[in-house]
Length: 73
Image (tube, rainbow, N blue to C red; front, side, top):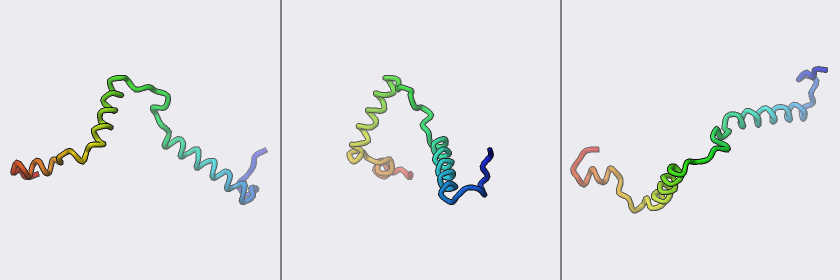
């Protein structure tokens, strides 16, 4: 037996819409790398990058370096 949209109650239609939206969002935003592992060399570089970004306030921006050297950026 085929159910038609016209035969659904409002609540049944809401459930169908929620299921379709949930499935679509899952397909769009799923992690294509799920289940994969990082190579050790990449994990080390990534960890270093994370640690460095936490000390970002100690870094000098490219604009400041250019200004100190009299360069137009």
